[in-house]
Length: 82
Image 1: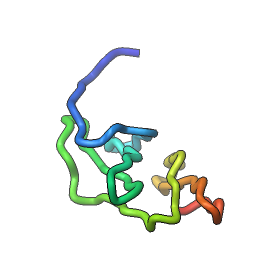
Image 2: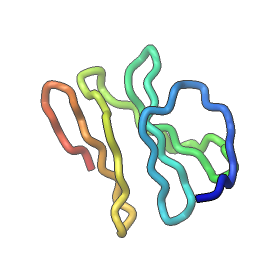
Image 3: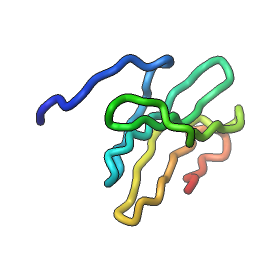
């Protein structure tokens, strides 16, 4: 593998996934809880982010061949969100 780009993020990234359009989906945690922040390949924050309820503990994510995003929840409900 070869480094293509790097940049600083506001919160510590926990898990990442890259889609076919080179959009980076990152699980981050801040004082409000877990969220998915979306970045361009240049490191710009994109407006489509996902904030979860406090009961959801996002631990993993993936994007399937059709571009669907799935998120694993390690909270009390143990959901796979899609």
